[in-house]
Image 1 (cartoon, rainbow, N blue to C red):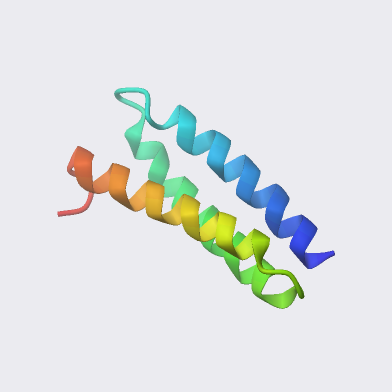
Image 2 (cartoon, helix red, strand yellow):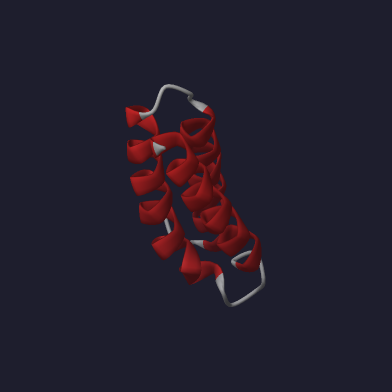
Amino acid sequence: MANILSLIIGIVALLCAVVAFIPLLGALNWLIIPLAVIGAGIGLIGKSKSGTALNIFVIIIGVVRLSLGGGII
């Protein structure tokens, strides 16, 4: 159950990350990264690690996008 919840959170965060690639919406990554961290934490509880892997991927995408946009120096 925890892995399914983690996958759902990861998919929602990934869809929001796609929207955050639109110019002037990059600040949305400041909300996506904590959401993905919560999803990864929930994924650690489950037996399968696919939800955790998806959320870590979303975190990496968000951090890279923030660093390219100047949000993280």
